[in-house]
Length: 85
Image 1 (cartoon, rainbow, N blue to C red):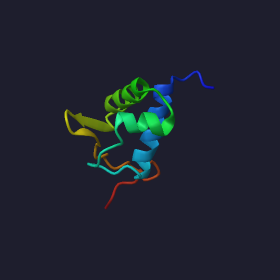
Image 2 (spheres, rainbow, N blue to C red):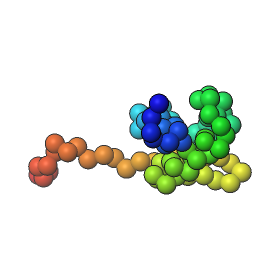
Image 3 (cartoon, rainbow, N blue to C red):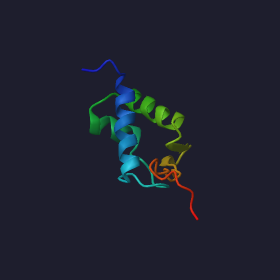
């Protein structure tokens, strides 16, 4: 049990899949119904998780089409502080 809301926990799981490349840019994420079934949560929880992912800038939802992973900018290497010559 966690004090963190269930929708936020589900959003974290999906965010990890996006960051790992398991859910690729410009590809759809599973539907709210599928997420609810797969993770054993209410459809409203899956909907709120999708809203959380939109707020984080990880997905975009197109009405009538579904939700898609947004292309993520490359992450700078924090150890690479030296300028390129």
